[in-house]
Length: 235
Image (cartoon, rainbow, N blue to C red; front, side, top):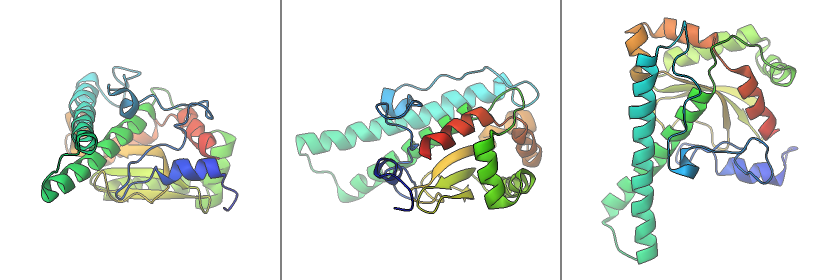
């Protein structure tokens, strides 16, 4: 399996989007030290580690984003999941079009939950540097950290929803990926490492229509320690 363990293969194969639930590859608490503790498990929004990120995002920007958009996605996921599960357990029939819409809604909302959690948890107030392991992987794939950063920003500027650095376990390659909707754009089985939300609701309070400045500032506030943990969890 190209040096990928069966355990990681199983975790990542349930973890891509383009139609599947996007789940990090380090969600198994029994075998991983960095266990998943987010909304898909608890049913409650994962608390923010900060109220604001000085010099980047204000409390007025972050709070409604976390409460309305992330929290709203979680509520939508829970409602769709309960509805689908009840239909299975109780054996009730659902109109085919409604069933399909509810299935798609659950996937869309679940992916939104995970992407928001990765986004919020992946930022820090203080600038940091990538650890040697992830830095080496980035240099091997992109040539240098600077070349990766330039391509990542180009991806983010081109996106209308999300951009991310993702690791693909089957070929061991890193990819900068553009995703314009929660349920499309991400490589099957890939695990997001760096995630930026580029929907307007993520930056408009602080940056108005200056998306480029928001993206540039984001690069200064990547929590590379968190990125390193994510990368280590899937290696």
